[in-house]
Amino acid sequence: MNTVYVDGVYIGKAKNLGHGLLTDIDKQEVARRLWLWPQGLGSDEHGDPRFHTGPERALHHYPAEHYAWWRQRYPQLDWRAPGFGENLSTHGLDEHQVCLGDMFRWGGALLQISQPRSPCYRLSHRWGVPNLPQQAQDSGRCGWFYRVLKPGFVSADEPFELIQRSYPGLTVAWALRTFYREPLEHAGLKKLVDCPALSSRWRDIAIKRMRTGQVEDWTARLLGLPLEGLRA
Image (spheres, helix red, strand yellow):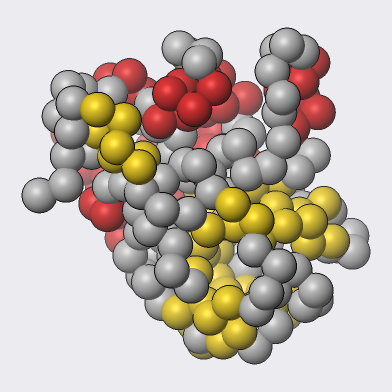
């Protein structure tokens, strides 16, 4: 695996978009050490805790390399981290180079890849591009989430190192392609279900697809609903 360079670490506060919509996508770079705990990074807030936090989505990693691709498509926009709401931006890793269940040591913390990110309509609000979530999903430029196996202090100055790979055939790129581009292909769904490192949410969805032969409606996630993101 290539040497991984941490470019930036980001946290933010949830903001109101109006009509009850909350977003956490606007984050700010933090130079100091932060405590990474099982629910997230430092004081980072989440617009919709149902989908953007919790033990299996504690930290969002987005490859810095992807922004060059977005700049080619939309050169009028100032594409740069943390434009996808990521907590961690790096050079040296992308969805084709990491696998479900990969374990990384970062500073004093131990992380494990739990699932790819499912892009949502908040990206459209952030960039003013109506179909941006669909483009991210179709291109596989989504990033991924970690669960925290061991909490600890982290910073941009700390090494980010792969220490264990248990599922070398199950790259994040493969999981995204299977989940979104071949959503009813039985063999792929079976591999997702049988991977214990994959988040329970993704495994449950795969099980339901296998049982019903139907794909869940993605409209609310990709386009948003009037009360989507309303804090209870």
